[in-house]
Image (cartoon, rainbow, N blue to C red; front, top):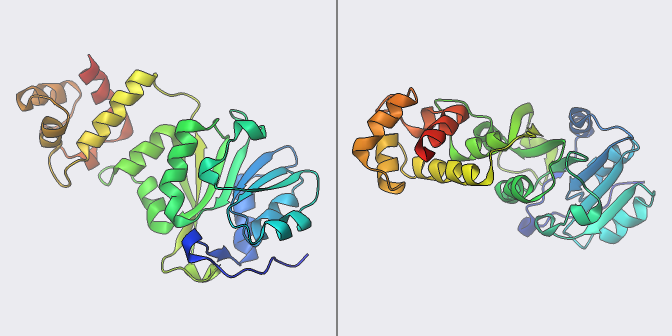
Length: 264
């Protein structure tokens, strides 16, 4: 069936992917098979949904734009394809049969929900086995950053998953054409996490560490973490950190080690 006809709504951050080769690359990166359950975010005109449906996988596609719901439901009437009208940020995965480690997320995400969506999935949802997402190229770079270019987003995502950039995608592959290029990223969620109290401590430490841009970590922690500045050099020495180090220079493992020593 031909693609659903739709003009993009700016309020929904819609930029429709029109290049079938990019669609194929997304499905290939997700390694979707007939045995999989896939959650798609924002099917829109249905280009990616068609490619996912062709694999034989069970597909749950959540679409906020009610203008296309009827057409999508009419086209994807096969038993394994379910079109749900709703906001993905309010979606209940457990109520729709999605279990820990038992589904994949594949999405051309509206740019403006990227951070909120990732936080919702990592903090509230059953763990997906794999996420393949289209995001802004700059956001993909931030997520996959390494020292000395670490940032709060990178550390937050890398705590929950192993991120990887699959391929850059130029703006001309979308209609309407966005002002920035995009990238396909892979996020493979980690099965193991810290205990709740330790996790809370780690993220409190991260927020304090990045509270002042381009400032030495010792100053940020003294000001925003309730620690005495005179105590920090000794603590840094115990964890192998230089006294003048900045937050962007620490890897996730170093932050976790620092958090462990502070807890003690």
